[in-house]
Image (cartoon, rainbow, N blue to C red; front, top):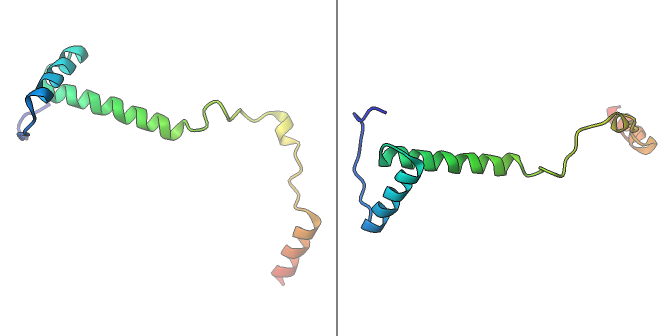
Length: 85
């Protein structure tokens, strides 16, 4: 990453210590890289939570599912015909 656009943030000494441990654990080259990796992991987890809400509940469609009756009940058909005119 280019360091041409940087900024300074104020954090506590405890936060610096936490960032140093995170940087070492992630084998990141800088605090910036460690923070970015942490954010990416967070985003991936959020996306998995959003798009995985039905995980384990939904099963693929089968041929048996195709055999269902898709016709409207007679009363609903009559109501539609009545509304068209």
